[in-house]
Length: 172
Image (cartoon, rainbow, N blue to C red; front, side, top):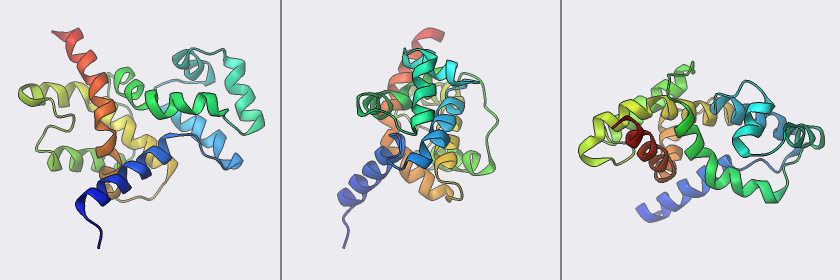
């Protein structure tokens, strides 16, 4: 029988395997599209700017259908934080993404990023990023139920909290 710790570790591994670029070459272009969309970047140039690389680098990844391992670390460690930081307005997202964020907020008693006393402010300021993150996960695995999306989002909230702390400091 799976313990609560086993379940948390399983959800964290599932979340991290989705956040990094796929090993399947056919999935790379769709992954790059989803990452750019989640960052609010209208093109590969916007994704490249966010990553601090030249646009032709992203174009090469598309053409080769592979992201070099040296850049996979950026997606694993920085993408979620950037999604949270860059989405200050409410993005246009699917019903699945909206339902997952509502469920996430309900399951965490209104404090998905564990902001404590400033929970309402943090949730309000971070709503655009939470919606973009949920849509990113939907884009990578369409058809998931809200409960599954929340299980994948919860382990990512520590990375998201870093973006939220930056955003909160800016509005104070």
